[in-house]
Amino acid sequence: MDVADLLSAGIFDGPALSGAVDRADAEDVAAVCALASHPDPRVRAATARELPLMLGGEPPAPAAVDAVTGLTRDPDPDVRDWACFALGVQWREVDTPEVRQALAERLHDEHTDTRCEALVGLAHRQDARALPAVREALSRADGGLRWLELEAAGALSDPSLHELVLRHLDGWDDVDRLRVEAVRRLTDPAGTGDDVVEGVAELYRRRAHGRGVEDVEDVLPAWHQMSAVLDVNPRLAPRLLAEVAAVLDGDALALEQLRSRSALAQQAAEVDDGRQ
Image (cartoon, rainbow, N blue to C red; front, side, top):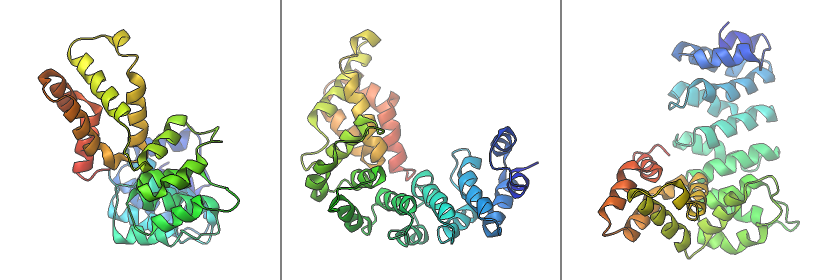
């Protein structure tokens, strides 16, 4: 059975579904898109959930984007949640006025998870409508904040949010501390930090000159912090690449290592190509 048949039969998990998802082709994607109008909300939610997985990391076809965009307006909150997650996070390279508008319409959704997924999706697209919503979330009188709302602040990387962000750095027991620190650095008017840039530069310098794993352990924390920063805001990769290159100026071997054989250079190229 293909994915559409399995979902229509009420099979929403298990090896049969995962196998069908892995084997999916364009015809299967089209069949699942058609389920966006299915009368069962569980099927519609599964449609939004499975479509991104069926694409194997490839950009979604316009029909898939249209189907999921429509599901952001579904009467069922679980469907809206999965649709906003697909558009806001899994397909955040898709940046059209229609997608932005669909996410903006959910900024005041009564369903908290839906609202947060929409907010972080708009923030990743640097949509101006995200900034007042993030500021409002960071300023709640009761101090309550969801992680996605704090992540949205980091994705925007607006220095005007920094003082508000500083109020919310503790208490995230279920979130990687590097990601929390990344949000602090991303909103800091002083930038992401010379310690990170210089540490990453030193890592590439040592690798370029033949130093082994045991000789770079002291600078690996800088790399891990930069990775967290770029996970929250991938758009900064070109700027960070330039900053690291400036530190390595004059060291031809290290610059070659950085520009030709680094994950940072690859991320920067993806941003320049519009894939982030």
